[in-house]
Length: 535
Image (cartoon, rainbow, N blue to C red):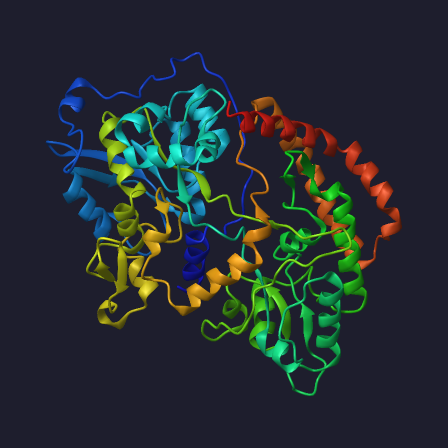
């Protein structure tokens, strides 16, 4: 269950890694085909309040099953059936095979009325929405039957733009976090090491960071009389790359737009050379773990629990160091380099493609009213934490302050929550706000928020919006990246370890250009400009 606990924590914080969602298409089908229910369905619909329908209806739903509780037995979904009059028959598939099963039901034509969780990719939206009409347009339904979501989209136009395909339609709904922070799990300092070395503040420049890592290697901060400390630990650089990029002015690991709206391909930026130069220096002096390119995350964590690591990435420091949540292990603040002030990546607060309605659904209006409840504070509370009275209750319902209740039978809280709601180990349609979380933040959570507000937020921006590419552009980007990504990863490791001297930088840049890196920038600049114009 520990694995699922951490998966849920990552999803709740929206620290899943931001994916460039892409795809486009066109269709000769009428745009709104299949997006209106029958007269019988409309006459059965209550325009507001609960229940949603006058006479109960049954629909089919496909979602991701994490293997803990059958959805038909979940208290949250039972309560929703009683509240709304809408019953669902669940056609779920295991988490690890869901994408394959979903593709099969699309191909067979035996798809459900609703897809819930299990992210649809942009190509799915275009293919099964714009081109085939399997997924129905939702924007009209949102405007008329989803006041909660419609208000969020009106108040946050970037979200509306990001879920609107090039043909002007919305084919899926997102998971929204209006209180999102980290792009991915931050870097953390081992507080015991800082204390042993007499440091009362964390490094603020690359030179100070180097000096700290050097002291860790030489001064035995874990106090065992051995030189077994590992100053900077990583797994293939994937966990630390983005945070270190910020020291050299880069917001994203692949594509990012600067404050002026110019799109950049990170691996060919001058800042990337600065990043490689710094890591190569750390490697040569054994300040960067020499097992970086071969070890697993579990092996990295074992070193942390053995009190050997000084600086590392994880969702929380205690996930690597072990023990309980602690406010003594400071969050890393991106450090200033020779190129100027640092920057940081901010999570967009958006995960697309988590809810869609198909053309088999005879009650799209009622379905939209059903899902819109989860975009209210009350609905998101119930979906996130399960029905009131089991694991929590209101301390003050007016301002949504909540308090936790004892877990029945003394069970693990997260394991038990997973039996109540599908919002565990998957991404679901809802909105997370400070109100939704209110009352559950202890001293540790407040400390995390303060660290983030002081060290990350002032220099952070979303690296790149979630855009759609034309079908031709998506095919070209996919083709180019299949080779480019492999080459860049190989060369990163070679430059860092010294197998390839940085004197060959110009040759490397020339190869990137020959492989189409500049074309990728051109394609994404066009997509960004289209997104930025709101078209």
